[in-house]
Image (tube, rainbow, N blue to C red; front, side, top):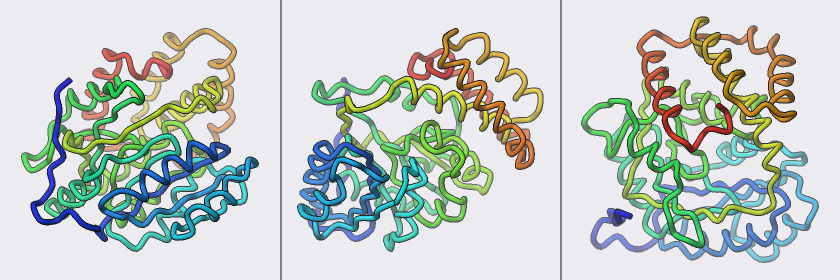
Length: 311
């Protein structure tokens, strides 16, 4: 595995007031507490905002007791990714780093991300290299990021991206707010694609930045079937919200042919169909140049293996 040392500026090893970290969580108290300890010990000393999506295992109380200096937001219900919107509304730094309760940023990466964004005013966000713990191996999706088929301006710090991974990305807070944040209907699972597309429509760029690193220790407390249902449903909704008609038809047909033929897929298509009235009401297809980029990205993803759960 190729190592990518974090690019830091000499003499700037202390706290950095440019990046806040937002963590969403639900019923993963012990994993969250481990993550918060690691974030607290980062040399950048970032402000940390924790959104508790209505946990029932004492998560909120444990965070209040162990980390009184962090901002705890109680969502009151399970908002999924939209919980991040609540936190970003409270962020006062120019940049916001997302991570989940089972992931944490490498020391120095937040400072390096801020440096990259400071120097590139039209760069909306940078996505980090992801190491899976405890093995320390790269997540399979990293190859997809590194080999992105998209072209971009020469000032990008790495390959241009068509979307991003929320739990491994530092975004410009104002760009996030201007684009509307994560759509509430998508909840959690592939929610980034719609926001990323709307950022690009507004003239922003997204990039993979191999000098940044985030660690991910996948939680065992997850419902893989439910995630696949929501991920496939959201892929279909996004397709009909933003893709031109023929591309939407073609993409839907491809998914129908290639997803696993099981009850989860049937459920996902059923839920997508149930949401079709609001999707068609808000439908706003992208321009031809942006659609060409999406087609190139789609073809590359089909050749890879990291997204086969959605076809």
